[in-house]
Image (cartoon, rainbow, N blue to C red; front, top):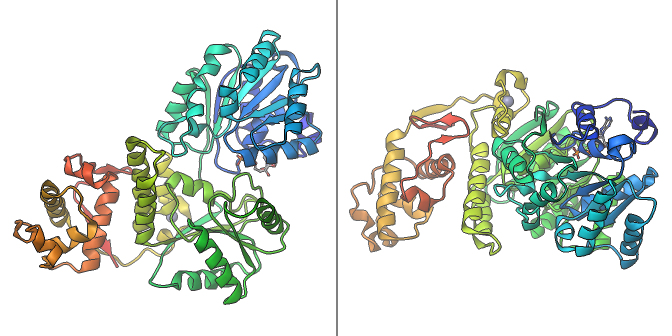
Length: 521
Ligand code: ADP
Ligand code: ZN
């Protein structure tokens, strides 16, 4: 334990770190669930350098993220720890050196590998077999273990084959770590790795110092103006990240913040040259400028402690991703803001991206589209405590009374007009079903128009104006009917074709909807 301060320069353990370390050093399997920034790396880095008794040998860290791997390897080397890395993006020289070390006499404490390398390289398999036979394989660490779950978005085939670890090396302890905590993923990880008897270390995913707000994008560029005003008044000269899902938008937003509002902002995205990326990232990290406008390519493995705000200028792909992205704010424990700008067109953009992704199976598409609707629902639900909504997603109950006015729904409980729209909702679903009987693909706009009794060419062409429910919501304003449909999709979290099969799921996000209450300001 002396190594905690001498090597890592830390005074005390954070929650569950010590338990995780003791469990793995004892030779048992462990699943560690910690929010982003919770301190997962220490859980395996410290045991890796304790070469005594049972824990002697190399700790293999399997990580899907090259950037994260190289950051960690760098920082471990600086601490004087013997570590090697096998990845596709390093020079042949470095690779040769890594092999030399791993097969040499004095073994490194840690070896970082990608799951692909582990699976496809015979040399790696032979080497591991030899280490195993010589009792020099200390443990396997599966970082970002949620990737293993087929439910997860970033599904990687090679991660699926990690079940071999337990079969091939039955008595080598496994440590799996993730910042995703929902029950289904948890069960998937345990099943797939074959670690049924593992210790599960779960802690609250609540980040009390983060303040959550959702704002609605208005037409035009009001989002950017609003953002600039917010930053200037709440976080002048403070560090922050703005996420946007398109590269062009990143450049545009950074430029406008700079030129129109005098804020020190730069953009970052995957298509930039490596050299530019490094420069921008370093500049931001060293405080040369405060605001980075980036796609989600930015942030993995970044460890800046004083990020005071994370703004989403477009929707995250899922609530899980949202929690991870916002998790990069306030690692130092100081109050920080997480603001999301919601625009309904962002929902469509994401869904179209998923539909057009040829690498995804039909089932994966369906799951991912569900996640987008869940995300949309978080934005549209301007009644329930946002913290409670996020934690509900992670299967963690949270009493909104404890939010302590730190989300915009708790701060500004609105004067809401609440209506029971069960009748309209039922009509909407029935109408949609009868439209789908005639036409395989129906757009939301067409549904809305038909429900409101439009006689437009598009409606009459298919005789939709002859349907019994045509015009049944003629008394509801357009924007409310639109919102009703969006809400229905969110609540079903199924795509439109599934709805037509009568597969209607009212039980969503722990809110059993018997009758549908619809709120508008
Ligand atoms: P995660 O992988 O869970 O997102 P990290 O392992 O990167 O988190 O740790 C986040 C930050 O917390 C790092 O800056 C790390 O140095 C710091 N940290 C981790 N454990 C401790 C500790 N026991 N005491 C002080 N700082 C810690
Ligand atoms: Zn709240």
